[in-house]
Image 1 (cartoon, one colour):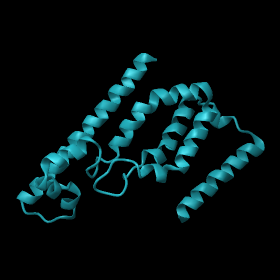
Image 2: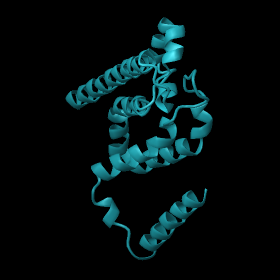
Image 3: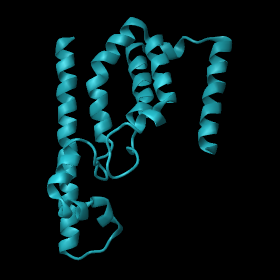
Length: 174
């Protein structure tokens, strides 16, 4: 398991580095748009004007995940999941029901927890890892226990199906 842990941590570092490269590329793309004097909606998304006003601060904010350039904003969440994967796998192997219960609890308070994420440009991250972790946990559980989706029978299976349909309908309405 130590080998797998190292692979997850290495993958998290790779994702973080990709995030940094994307951030630099967004600033560079914005600089090119300004240099060519192209006024496009994409110019604002590059955050190049903030970078030009204070390059050191802007780079520091990207390094510390306070500023998440457009199109790179999902990568910090993926890096977080890669770091947490070894712990989540160990918890799921012990008792997946407790991991799922904790994940649902975290999901319920995700909007509140999201307000504690470091940010300078928007009031919250575009992808709140506390909310999206439930998708990660569900995938992890099904990956470790592929027989689970086939286990519910009869009334339990029908109740789960109805619950899933209700959740989707509520989500569509909201």
